[in-house]
Image 1 (spheres, rainbow, N blue to C red):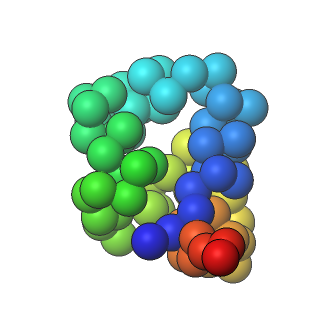
Image 2: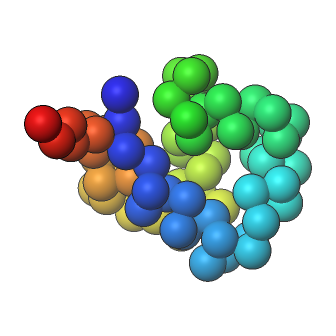
Length: 73
């Protein structure tokens, strides 16, 4: 499971709503919600497009897409 909180923040910063971002990505709101909830996997092509739309540098991809959720006991 990955933590998409930084990605969510970037989406709000650039697009104001998850729905507008989903539209630009060519995805439904439901599909985007599933991805951000970790219920659906991101395709490589989707990650690249998201980086272009959100102005995320490729070297920062791990920060936005592959930060593990920290489990607290």
